[in-house]
Length: 592
Image 1 (cartoon, rainbow, N blue to C red):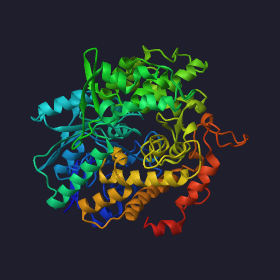
Image 2: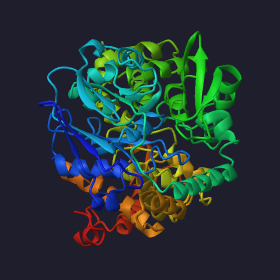
Image 3: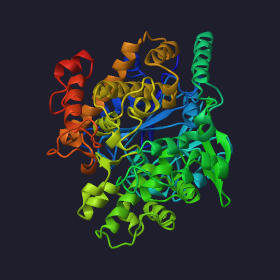
Image 4: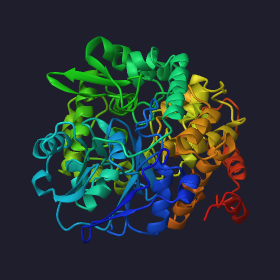
C-alpha cells in the first residue's frame, strides 16, 4: 500500500488498552494523513467545549504518506489536539527523525485518549507496542529523558519524543521535543501530554512496513531533489545561515517587531543575525531525515551545545525583549529545548511582562534589554516558580490578570510570530484568520510579500491578499498532511505537490483536489472553533497593530486594514459575514 501502513494505534490511557485500527481509504482520500488525519480524528472524538486538560480531550501524533519515504524534506509529523493556550483545534509540526522512525515502525498515527493515574511512556518497535511505567523519568528534562530511555532500552539509536518539566507542570506554552532540539512547539501540546501523565514516546524500527512502487517513488525523489537544487536551497542562504538568514532582511524592511511590538526596527540586529551566528557560535549544520538543505544549526556557548536558535527564537528572546546578545539568546533557547517550552510564546510573554513593568503595571523590575533576566525567567516558567507560575499561562492571561490584555501581542491568545503585520497586509490577514491562533506557518504570506515566492506582492497593498492568503492556508494544510517540510514551497508549486501526492499514495490527486483537501481541513478546524465559542471578534489583531475605526484608510497607512480584507476573505471562503461556513459550501467540499 503506497505511502501508508494502514495502521492507526489507539491508546486508551484510562485502562492501558492498546488497539490497532485500519486507516480507511476514504480518510486517506479526504485528509491524506498528518495534520488532516489528526484534525478529522479530533472532530470525531472530542466535543468542542471540552476543557483541554480534561481526560476526554484526545491527542494525536500523525505522519503523512511522504514521511519516511526518502523523498527530500519528507520528515514531518503533526501533533493535533484541543490547545490549552488558545482553545482552538490546533496542530504542531516537527521534523528531525522521529516521524520517519514512527512510520517505519509500521504506524501511520497514534491516538492517545483518557488519562493515566501514573506517569507512562509508549515503547514502540516494528514488532511490538507497550505502555511502560515512566515514574523514573518524571521530573527529568527532555535531554535527560532521551538519554535515560536510550540507555534503559538498550539502543542509542532509539528516537524519543517527550515532555520536560514545563509539560509536567501544565505550562500552556509547553511543547514536545524530539531528538533534543526539534519541537512540536506551538499551542501547549506538551501540556496536554502532561495532563495525561504521558512522558514520552520511544520508537525503534529496523524495517519499513510500507510497500511502495519502488521505481515510481525513486523517480519522485529524483524530481523533488532536482527542484530543490535548482531553487538554490542546498547552497543558498538557508543552507549557509539557517533560518536566521532572515534577521537582517526582515529588519531592513522594518518588519522586525521590537520591544513587544512597540517598534518595527532593531538597530543592532546585525549582532544577532545568521551571519553573526556563523562567524561566532556555529559548530556544524544539521538536517532532518532525507534533507539535503541542512538548515539546522548546532551551536555552542560557554561549553553548552545545542540546536538553534532559529529565526523565531532569535526574534522572541532578542528584539522582542530588547536584547542583542546572541550568546544569551542561544542559552535561553537551549533551556527551552531542555525544559520543553515553545520559544515564540515564551519570549513574547516575557516581552509583554517587560512592557507591563516599564509602564508601572507590574511591581517586578523587568526591563527591556536586561540580559540577566532571560535564563532565570525561563526556568521559573518551566517550574512555575514565583512570577513564572503566572507567566506559564501565556501573555494574554498574564496581561489580563494585571488589567491590560491589550499589551498581549496575540491572536486567539497565541503569541504573534516575528513578522510585523503593520507593513504586511497579507500576513496580518493570515494571523487574524488562522484557525490555531497567530501563526506564520498556517499560510506564510511572508513568501509572496517579502521573498517574492511564487510572485512578488506589494506588502502594503490589500489588493489580492484575501485570495493569496486563502490559497497559502489551504496549500500549507495539505503540505502538513503529506508530511513534508514547508520550506519546499521555495521550490515546488501546488501542481508539484499534487504530483507527489498522487505518486506516493496511488490516488488520483490533481492541483484542484490537493487544494480542496487543504480547504476541507481548514473548514473542519474553523467549525470546531466556532462550536467551542470563538467568533468573528477573534479574527483580528491587537489594537496597536490595527487602523482605528475612526481613521481614514490610506493605502500606505502602516497599520493592518481589517474590514476590507476580512470581508473579502470570508466571501472567498464561502462563509457568511460572521465567518460561519454556508451549508452549501460544506456539502460541496464534502465536509461533515
